[in-house]
Image 1 (tube, rainbow, N blue to C red):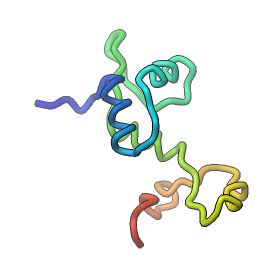
Image 2 (cartoon, one colour):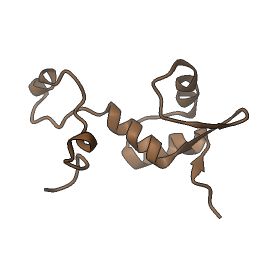
Image 3 (tube, helix red, strand yellow):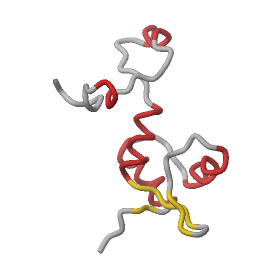
Amino acid sequence: MKSIYLNRKQAAHYVTEMWGVPCSYKWLAKLVVVGGGPRHWKWGRAVRYRADALDAWVFGRMTGPFASSSEAHLHLRAFSYLKSGQGLPFEEA
């Protein structure tokens, strides 16, 4: 049976492969301490992540979509497709 929880290296690989954004296990370790990282679970000293928590974290860091680079300054905060009910940013309507 495969675990639904990923260790740091697996989580970093998941974010990089699934979303195409750079993510290292060392960065995830730092974010556990300073904050701003994905939700995580602990079992003793071991930190574990779930794929849905990693997805939500990536969505929270995204901004856009933009038609041009001059449009980016108009968005003062990240737009959440999940909260707006519009679905994922890459879904066709």
